[in-house]
Length: 149
Image 1 (cartoon, rainbow, N blue to C red):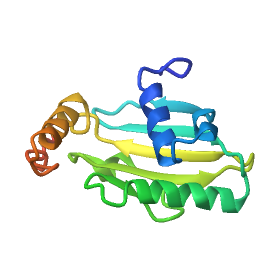
Image 2 (image 1 turned 90 degrees about the vertical axis):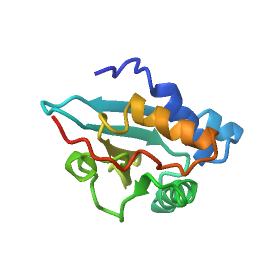
Image 3 (image 1 turned 135 degrees about the vertical axis):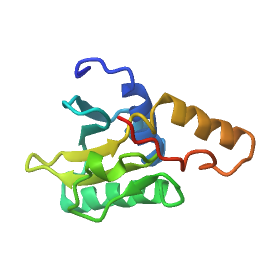
Image 4 (image 1 turned 120 degrees about the horizontal axis):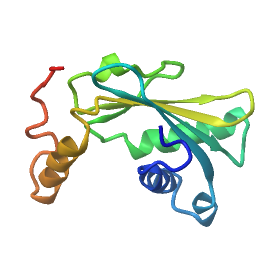
């Protein structure tokens, strides 16, 4: 859903630009974000296609390194080991986002991610942001697992 104009596109763009170093070149990057709506009660799996200036293996590895460094200290965003695809079942009932990067045959960088939208959704984000604003531990109140549905 929302392939042509998704409400979170600008947030994703800003995150990619920040991870890439906020350069003019990063500001001009192009990508396609494709969220997948599946017949399941919770979870979002998304695919983001990025055209890198350097479409070689070295360019993909540089992107992996930049994203890895950007989230190295994150309590909730986890860059998976190379080759491992994120699964919604792996984040079910958590505030985590699992992501990974792949090089498509076209040379594009393909970023896949999985979240539990009933935990990492608006309410979970609000609690996480409130914790940060008040100097509380980032994950306070977010470790309670709500599994229904």
